[in-house]
Image (cartoon, rainbow, N blue to C red; front, side, top):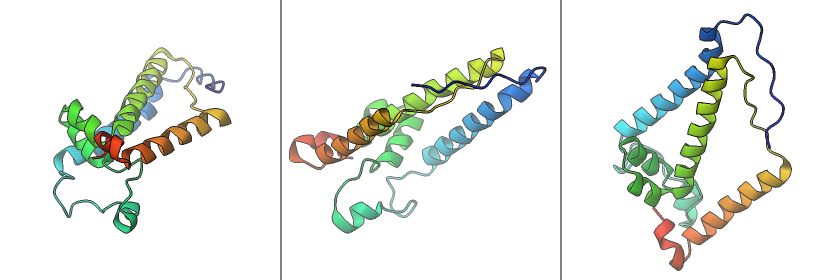
Length: 144
């Protein structure tokens, strides 16, 4: 699944190795802090999904900001109800960040996230099925 990773630069300090994953984690933390502070449930703070506005159809990302807001407040049930696919993405991102930070700390190779074509097709199919099911009456539980 993952492509071969590059070897660390010899003699590079631990602080320098931790800079990129640390800054990436800080940026994600700031984004979650902003969404956690500015409630997407109140109108006027964020733009409406263009697909939903024009067609009334929920895309795979609809409810993602509400999900992030609930997740930032530790309400996993509400986050899953707003967008379960986004919550899965939060956990996947967290796992990748842990791997990256541990490898950077130990001086190991930087993890590379490169999926082969079949995996991209599988992820795209999953997002499409999620979008279709949440727009059908029996999938109303997946709608935000």
